[in-house]
Length: 168
Image (cartoon, rainbow, N blue to C red; front, side, top):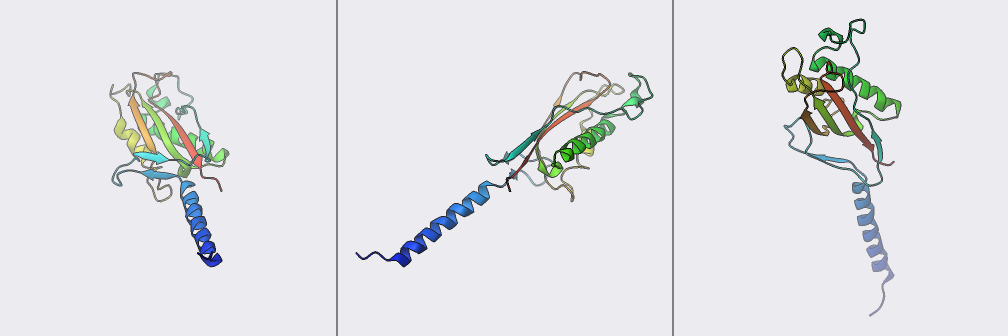
């Protein structure tokens, strides 16, 4: 059997193409889930991605002149969630990340002291202003848990995020 260099070059080109294509695909962050859901079910992050982690952020006072314990100092769950999301957005941007890079969230919701109820609706309304939008179409995987209280009992939500970027 005679060795044909043309077939060998074609074979090497084909193998190179497959390896290159697979390595490109493996570099992407892949989020999957029900398109109708406000969150993703799974996230696949390449092993060489760059990560950014935050601790749990809580709301800043919207009326700092008020005493702790006055409801209006921090507001309701939705108001606090917007405050937290804005703080997270700033922290991400300071490190070169954005909400588009967030793939995971852990959210702790405590009962609103006025109603005694968990305001998951208010939290989700705030969330939908930042994720699953035209500006930020991604929807992170997310765990939202009801807790008895946070360290400050006048704060009703604490959020931590993990962001990742595919290598360039």
